[in-house]
Amino acid sequence: METKIKINQIPITSQHEGYLWWSNNPIPVAYLKDKLIELPTTSNPFIIEGNLYDSDNQKSYSIRFVDGQHLVNCFDLKEMEGEEFIFKQYLPNRLSDNVQKLCFREYWKPKPDEFCEEMQVLKPAMTVFVGFKCKEDKL
Image (cartoon, rainbow, N blue to C red; front, top):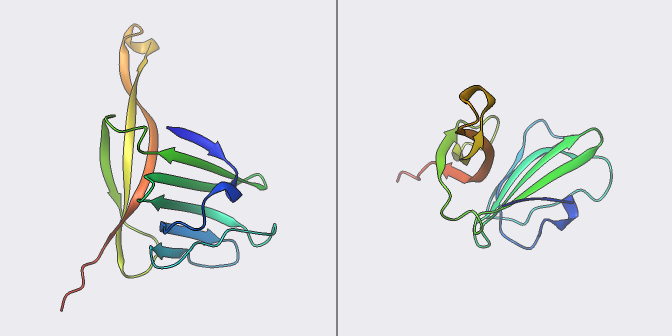
């Protein structure tokens, strides 16, 4: 499920797939399991936004900088196994040419709805980053 953590609790020794958008950089830094991530050690520069996926440990990290602090959500996909989701793909903005799509799982949960006489209605619960769809090398 979803857990709020501090940014320094993200394991930097795992090979992540995703991106980090630093405050001093006009484009995000993409990680394709080709290098270890770097996390901020000072207050400047900071990460404006980031999504990381650790496929070996089945964990996804969402990073947002809000009101002077990093808000980090960790999603454990092993704990969410068996739950229904919709697979979504979005076009990237300013990522490397190799990245064709950003991939997410969109989870919906049944909740009572006041406009449906308190019957259970599926409502959006969370959107979890699960990596990139990269362009295939054509030889």
